[in-house]
Length: 150
Image 1 (cartoon, one colour):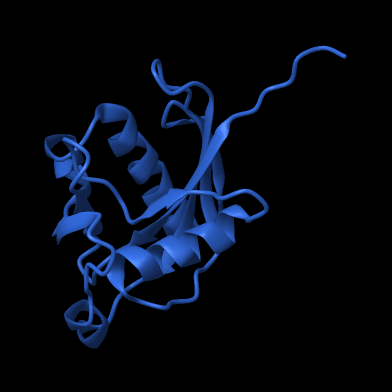
Image 2 (tube, rainbow, N blue to C red):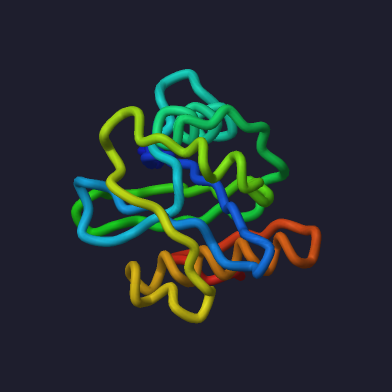
């Protein structure tokens, strides 16, 4: 049998505010900001992992909308990766006030405009988030490689 890919799989949520800015979080273990989410556990779907991670990281139990992006994004020191982004919708002011960093992985959150994403993370993350914003806006979903929609 020929070798098959065994990528790491992760899932995150795109939350937008009324101005269309993206909710970013600052993980304590990374040098850059990211969207809420994390790795999929064995036997878990990407959607279920995203719901679990949002609950663990932000203290919010929220339903998620459709899948916006699946991104083939291998990383030099991490190997093959498949990254999913799901539509988290818009948080209410009450939900924003209810955000709690329950598991200690995150230190802060903020809304960032799409044009300022590179100031908060690597370019391919910014491309992936912009692809998710575009899919959210047009009611569809997209496939990407290294953050670039194909």
